[in-house]
Amino acid sequence: MSLAAVGVTDEQLRLYRYLLRSPGRGAGDACASLGWDRDRVDEALDGLQDKDLVRLSDRATVLVSDPAVAVEWLIEQRLGELKTESDQVTAARSMVTSLSEDHRHGVEEAPAGEIERVDGLDTVRERLGDLAFFTFRELMALVPGPWDQADIEQARPSDLRMLRRGIRWRTVVGPEAAADATTTAYLRELTELGAEVRYTELAIRRMVIWDRGVTMVPADPDDYQRATLIIRQPGVVANTVAWFEQVWGAAGELPAEETANDAAGPPLSDLERRVLDLLTRADKDESAAREMGVSLRTFRRYISDIMLRLGAANRFQAGLLAKERGWI
Image (tube, rainbow, N blue to C red; front, side, top):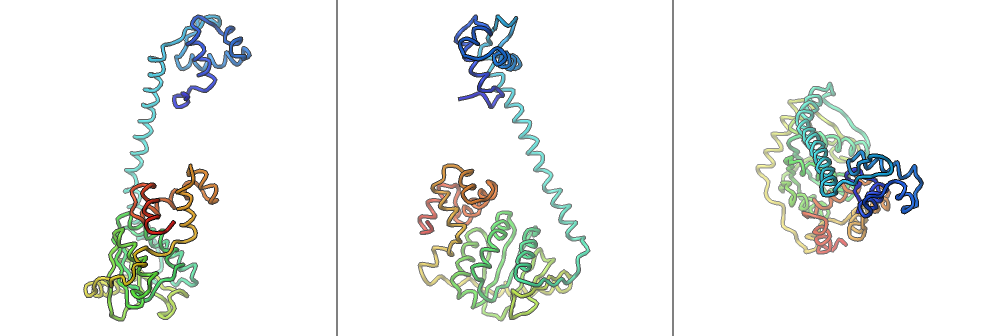
């Protein structure tokens, strides 16, 4: 045990304990008993005096303060400092709404082109992530065909963040998407977290709408990964929103699962398997993060995403649910 939390070093604590057990002793006695030189003892005594744990009438006479009073005072002082820091951090949170509004206004007022073409799969995925990050209220999507596992792994972090932020997430899928086990498993995973998914047999085209102000459609209807168009033209966006609402209103529930295996959820990525493995065997997050070669903050974000995916309230429950589903 130590008093480091209230600013007392280990050396100061050791000297303080000696003086408590040896009333009436001075600096010279401490040197002999502790095996320290005089400078070391004097430095520790000065630290103890600064914290009112001892009083020095001279270097030969040390008056030791009652720990029940002196240490308790240090604790109260530190708790007061922590409360002040906590109040300041909490006050900073009140700025989030205002800053987010400034940012939203800036995004809306930015002189972006009304139609932007984005070429290449990596760039398309990057822009999808950007648009999802800056979504404030609602996402609407039409998904005629299946997603491959790479698409899902790319989309999962931003989809989970949107759902955590309370953004309404609505998607209508067509027969090909609904027939794909990987796609439907992922969609069912999201519905457990609050997403809304419906099914239609209408002929729909791939489309995503963010906050009823930006629409993304493939430049080539037959190859959505090659290039995409990001449209901000109000008239076009309003028409895509109206079309989505029409499809949504006529759509029904996603077809029931046909096999028990579907209920186990989508396949885990290699990264998720590593995180779950470390979650069940690593003693500390720091060592787990080092083993993965990522920052502590990133590792904890991975854990948070997995807990959200499992619907777990804590890490222990996440481990149990992962075992129940056969993930680990």
